[in-house]
Image 1: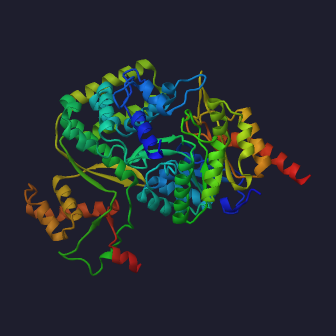
Image 2: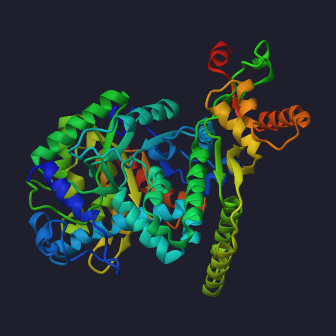
Image 3: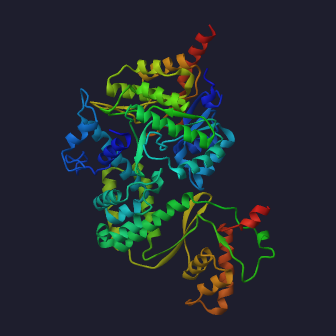
Length: 283
Length: 299
């Protein structure tokens, strides 16, 4: 089930985010890693060291692009310059699928550089799905939208977050990057059962899964990507792969980044759940 | 509320400056109380009010953009000092919110904005403009485009006074009133030590920086900001070199560029041919010229 049309019929295994502090280790030690996820915007440039590093990585590893500023949910039109540069990068990396967030972050041409939560309305679902389709048509590769962590909800919402996600992906006919850490964070911030979310996602559309750590404050949780994955998030992961199958999985670690080995070892903990699921399927 | 209206309402609040204690302002963008403004579109929960939930995003926005600007302009921070830099950065971001999908471009208007708003640079206006220009050139040289380098065979049948040479897009040519290259390298050297810095050391470093800025004497310099093996370097060049390279970048022929370079030069006329030859050797070694497009297509 996991290799599907939303991830280019690939079966990528367990990857980690490609981050600058690990460049030297990766290029000199050449560790065995199933795949790397890159932040597209870091490489949507004209030249220099970042692209030189990327080209070396591409010679030896599989790479998937993940974006942070497409803002499918922004009411304004797509940024054509962004799309043009993104397509250049897609042609360079040959990413089998591309992901970005189900959120908004710009208005009237001004960028907040944040992943702001959507109002879960039918109007927002229609506008967002239309933009996902436009991007998919322009880039000519499958798109997966990622659920974000959120700290606020709107009076205007007409449905739950997972109903909204389903509404968008069905209308856009796109994939899902299911971030189980984000589901956990939002469930704590908005008091819902995270398993209701995972159980409601159309499993056949899950192209990829994100796992990560977060920071707990007195009244809310922040999605900081600076800690190991906690047990409740692993439990959500386990449930997600029970439903979606052996799915490309990626650990995000973006702040207070430890050694390559520590990050990779944390990611490889996912193997325990993947093996158990595979065994259960075989039986 | 329509999606666009809701997003405009929220963005105005998120991008509104924080108070001096880094909290959300009590007054909303529409002049009314922020509590009422937030509660119009954000739901409270059992732990947080609408105001508090909106404040999370308001603070995240400012922490993110201020931190990005601080990372891009450590030299300007050293020149202005911590407090003045923070106030300046806030004013800059209010006037120049990001209009790009990438934070890389956030500081692109820094020099022109500082020029129009001299009060933020205080007594060091010219030095601040110089260092801001150098730091932006550093960003552009770091990830600027590199075309295939010019080879000797590209010049076969091309030599002559009408020859036009093309500078690599990533090479930046700049003139300054202060030796800001030395200052920026010193600031970076100190920043590299911060991993091991104690509070006492940090204070000492701050005082050292203030002294370095205060002592910096005006001195006209010309720089080429360029790359070697993907690392950015600052190369001091002679005024004539600067003029020659600038003329080439403007598309002038080699003959016209050489002529304009030496128009006010003190270099003796008999020394000029050898000087020009030496410069070209150096520039070619550094790969500063790119192959003409026709040659590239043919190869």
